[in-house]
Length: 189
Image (cartoon, rainbow, N blue to C red; front, side):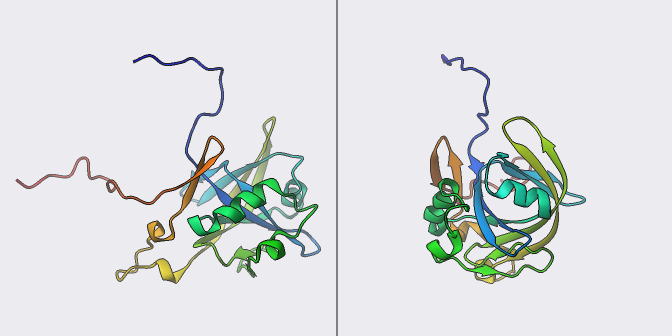
């Protein structure tokens, strides 16, 4: 099989695409779409988001050191894209999109009611890495929409039809193809 050789670049796709909510010191809310987000550590629970310093939300993040990661879904795909191309300098994204900010328990940034999972975060470190600043944050609260719980009280994100981002496009995911450890479980004959 022949493979093309490309210049070094970020080819780790697909990526989770999330909407990050922030609140400035005056209580003004904003949503920013982030495709560079991920899990960093289990104990303590930590995540990271990477944001270009020139983005409207970057100085808010640096000043308040708080944010909420809101998972995205098929239903939120339009809003996800809009929040990635429109600046909070120019438009109130919550109002324009008819989205609902809900007070969080641990941080001043709001939860996005329409999201199936909201992760409250408090920044512990900011790393300036070049084109982006990475915000390392401790998870201080998690909210999961009860409508995605099954009878055994297991959260079923697949029912929310989460979306991912790859090379300029959004995709719905959700088909289960295995479970953790299934490759080594004994099979009964």
